[in-house]
Amino acid sequence: MNTRRRFHAYPIISLFTLLLFLGMEMDAMAQRNSRSNRASRERSPQQQLIYDNINYLPGIRTVQFHPEENESGLPVWFLGAQEQLTLSFDDLRGDIRNFYFSIEHCTADWQSSGLSPLEYVAGYNEDRITDYSSSVNTFQPYTHYRFSFPSPQVKPTRSGNYLLKVYEDADKRRLILTRRLYVVQAVFGMELQMLPSTNNALRSQNQKLNLTVQTAGHSISNPHQQIQVLVMQNRRADVQQWIRQPSFVGNTELRYHDPRTLDFPGGNEFRYVDLRSLRLASERVADIRRDSLVQVDMVTDQNLSHLAYGHLFDENGAFFIRNEDRPDALEEADYAQVTFSLSADATRQVIDADAAKIYVVGAFNDFRRSPENQLVYDPQNKLWTATIPLKQGLYDYEYVLEDPLTGNANAVYFSGSYFQTGNEYQVLVYYRRAGTTWDEIWGYQVFP
Image (cartoon, rainbow, N blue to C red; front, side, top):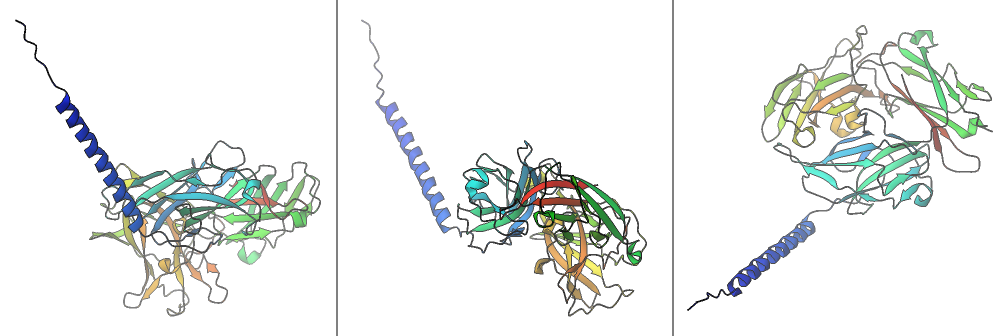
């Protein structure tokens, strides 16, 4: 007699159902926790828009905006080009947030052009930043965000100045940062000649530029009103000149050779610090200490203005994020509290310590003068010092003295000025069509 064993599937099905139920419950719990965390997390506050390179929150650090293949380049994009720009930044709050970006067309003097986004952008003029990562094994936690521009949703269709805005939760009032962006329609060509200043007293100190703009056969009916030229030294908004009156107008060219214009102090080569390693001190680092954060004391800088010019390779004020301690510089590079110090040089005119305003500037802070990078006088040690959080990397910097009467920055007071200095000049040519109220960029060139 054959006996068949009968197996019942009910216990197996019940176990499967139980596991499925538990999985669904855990997923629902995770979603509830996520919503609770988002609700309890303090959102970024609303901000007043400023048409400049601004970090609106103290925790937004190490903002880089440049062509993908040129880390030290001005953020210039040519209409229709395949190459893209890269914008990246760190948020020292360390959590994950929903950031979006959009652009606004501006005039040459960085006011809103009043154009509708439909007139200058293809797409929706808003995109979400989806590429981010958390820091790994760092004293200072942070989240690193990055994206490429243009994106499929945000692509300019008209040349000119643009303000790129990054904000939280698709709310344009909750600004995180803004950056200036230049979109160029390559129409005009340029030639630039650098000579010693025509002012005999400044021949050894200044660099005089003679600029010729080739108009490529375009008839400019009123070049004095329709053409504006901006020349920046080393991408600096605090060392730039506008010129609107050509010294010669021809059928195919405009010349800007007036001896009274485009005469720049040459300055000196930038100072630098190597922070690629926070374990081994480089030659410009005096001491490294570790507590809750990394503390770095730099070698005290001297006043160089009374010395003869000496060639030193620099990056014209740029900075680069690098890490020799770990393989990944973007997520594994740490932040350090870096103390800059400048000796009170008795060989120069005595500076009133109560009234003087001295700042340490570079591309790392967009050459902006703020309370954070203002030096404070230490009478006991006869030093001017400032402590700034910086991510591991290579940094060019210099000291500037603010004129108490004009508020302008004297960039050569502590370094001197020399014709031989190896500067880089960026030239932008703006064109306003007759009958319009906005400016386009029809020419861009970097010299040398």
